[in-house]
Amino acid sequence: MPKTRAARTPGAATRAVHAGEVHHGIGGPVAVPVVQTSTFTFKSVEEMKRWAEGRSRADIYTRYGNPTLRVAEAKLAALEEGEAALVTASGMAAISSTLLTLVGAGEEIIATRYLYGGTYRLLRDYLPRLGLRVNYVETDLGGVEQLVTPRTRVLYTETPTNPTLHVVDLRRAVALAHRSRLTAVVDNTFATPVLQKPLTLGFDAVVHSATKYLGGHSDIIAGAVVGRRALVERVRQTVIHFGGSMDPWAGYLLIRGIKSLEPRVRRQSETALTVARFLEKHPRVARVHYPGLRSHSEHRLARRQMQGGFGGMLAFDHKNGLAGARRFCQRIQVFLLAASLGGAESLAVLPLYTSHYKMSPKELAAAGVSPGTVRLSVGLEDPADLIADLKQALG
Picture 1 (cartoon, rainbow, N blue to C red):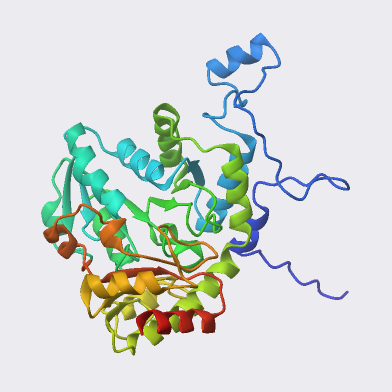
Picture 2: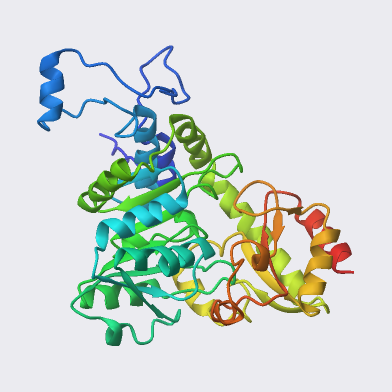
């Protein structure tokens, strides 16, 4: 008899396209239905009692759970290769709920210094009010073990960093965290699970601003947490009680974005490398921050831990400082002058006035942000059109 060929196991991207969906034969919907409701009915008083006793997983209220949101969560878990996922109302809801779940009053966090401005302000201005202490290390993770005390609970990082694209060694971070019995958490927004999968390297949890690449169309505010099921379910309880739950319509748009995530990120990564190489040679550019360039200080590390590209984000420092950066931003035509990132449209922004606004000169220097730093989010436009726009804006 002829040998039968074993079926190929689908990859993460394919699994994510279909994860959580049930197609009921002929006439079933291909698109996931939006269950746009605040509350759900019980079949009986007995079912209500079983739910209260924890013996039923019935939906009762969308803040606790919703069928549309569960599909989004299944897709995210498949993408990141995690046991479970949780969607939230924003990226900051995901980050704050995760940290507030893992750390309590009198306990400590160790964080890398290069962070998204919103995360940094959370750590600087709000967590200390709750009795949580934050200690910082550089992106090379030097000195982590010296900072660990019996009260330290979490090692938190992001890579590549916002906005200057530093790269943190994920394997080293995991080894340091687990050696000291810390929970390892990483913000994977810039890389996305298309380019790196921290959970497969041993991280306990990954957080995302799903507003960005996961949504991919600049039309939702959303966040996500992915990791071990027990940890994610603990964070879910925090989200339920603090109220950072996602709306079902946002969940539907997130599902749509996830289905096209891989081809979008691959295209944006290719174009970003082209843009970075152009900027690196331009006489009005002092420095380009992009891990795909050989001139980047962590290029070799990025090549080891990022697969198939270096992302669609980059930044550059204008030689004429803030005045030059402002002039550039006033002249762009294809790039749009707007905050956020990860959508189909290419965007430009000055971190000094957005993510890192109201930071002291010392804090800006510590974050690697100069007055002339411009951050670019590369979209899906023709690369030649983007280069032409940069050329005239810098001219």
